[in-house]
Image (cartoon, rainbow, N blue to C red; front, side, top):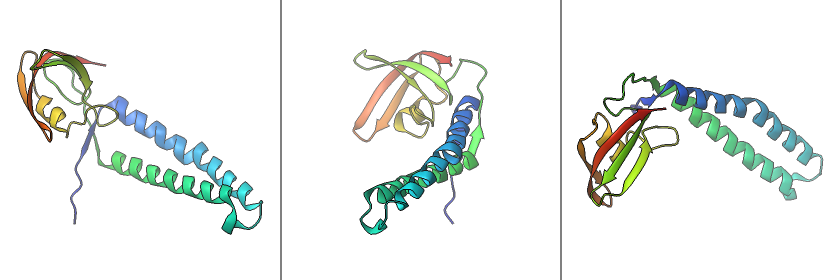
Length: 150
């Protein structure tokens, strides 16, 4: 049996996934069912582009619903109350070895994944810490300049 990893989410991130799931399972699913019904009315479905397009969209929708349900099932809600160290939900300002600054959000939802080379290097770091990022394209160093929460 393949063990599934927990997905660490903040309350806001979990809420965003739940909102998306509700939209997909409700209004979006109804829209696609209606589009399939209308397309069937055009006649022979073997050469009916609208029908095939709607069925394809339905398949993509159901796959996204499955992914969201799985992520929420594996979700572990985390909340960090301080800005002392980097955790899921942190916004981190950092500088690379060349002094180039960037800000990243440690997030499994639309940011730098905590499982990525950069995310895992930053987790637990404090302001002033230097971290080694072991990326597929090569290693590099970064210094944590600031940590904040949304």
